[in-house]
Each structure stands twice: as structure tokens, then as C-alpha cells.
Image 1 (cartoon, rainbow, N blue to C red):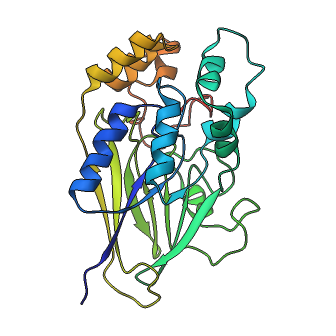
Image 2: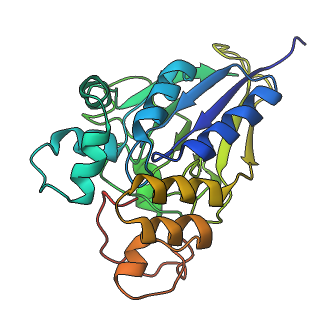
Length: 273
């Protein structure tokens, strides 16, 4: 058999250029030349402009995240607000590019129909966490107004929650890439490698690998401080300690991702992650 194709999947860079560069260097070191990006290029971190430029250069496929959808529309946010700072840090053509990104990307690999999107099959703002129920699991494979009427996927990959996992049931595989720039299941950036026969409609070997890449957290935080980026204390909390900013705001020191199984989800802004 000829060598299998490999695709690196990255997501949730969130303006963290230091982490993005470390992950791209690791991808290059593995000889992987195809990169797909599952969204949330901007917000939280201080260098959204540079991250968008780099992802445009390096990523063959780019889909839209929740921040990419709402941030370009925030020109009227209050002067001095965090949202306005992140909005204004981007160039106008970058905001237009983010707003126009596609919702999902479908392709075939090793006889498996694969669909990638940011958050769920319904919307970039509809969050599905690792402790989802059966109904939420099957809904991730549904065709919706957002995904269109393409072939039903048997493999779905997404980002958004900053919490990597892989689950297979009833012949369906759902996985989360984790986050490059704002990882919260642990503070080390995370990405995924798909391996198989790209475009191959017949069954063939297929793999999903999860990769952690250490980087210089303190260097990124130093840049954030030097640039006067907003909500720097919350950025420190997430990058250094892995504590979700929503928990910091509410006075909880609990980590974002590991709630007891089946506990009802707490109310949090869909635009925070």
C-alpha cells in the first residue's frame, strides 16, 4: 500500500500567535503539508491580525467559528471595551474574510464521509460539550440548514469547547480537536492528525491522532501585557492555569471542562469559548 495521506486539524487559535507558531512547527516537523482550520482565529489573545494572516497562508481549508461570526459586526461596541479592542486590531479585509468563511467542510477519506465544523450541526453558537447526551450525539451527524444536504457523515470533527475527546458509537465517530491557543482541558495546545486515503471511497486504514505541543506561555503573556490587550488577567488565568474566564468572573476556581457527568450545563456566554 502507498503511504497514507495526513491532514492536520487545528482549531480555536484565539489570537495566540506563540502557540500557533509552535503547533505549525510541529506539523512541519512531521512532514504534514495539509492543514484544515475549524475556526475561532481571533478574540481573547492579542494578535488576531497576525494569526489570521498566518492561517490564510498555511491552511488549505478554513471554516467559521463563533468569534469569527460575531466579532466583525462589533464596530459599534463601546470604545475601550474588550470586544472593540479585538475588533479594531483586525484589518477591515480580515473582518470581511472571517465573516464570509464557510460553515463546514465535507470530504471523503478511506471510505468514510467526514464533516468538519466549529461547534455543532446547527450553528457556530450552539455548544456541545464532552458530556453530551445521546440526542446531542446523533444531532451532530444530522443534515441541517447550516450544513446543507450533502451525504450524511460517519465521522464528525469539531472544536469550540477547547476540550479534546473522541467517541465512537453505532458506527459513528465524533471527535473534538481541542484548542491551539486557549486549551482548557490542560494548558498545552492540542491538534489532531487524520490519516487515511484522501478522496478514497473504498475502505482503507484510517486513524485519528491527538497531539500536544508545549510552547512558551510566559512569552505569550508578556506580549499580551506589552500590547495592553484587554482582559489580560483572564488570559493569564486561562493560559497559565487552565481556568476558564467564565469561572473566574463568577468567583469559581473550578476547571472549565470536567464537570460531573450528566450535570446540567451552567449558563455561560456562547461567545466566550
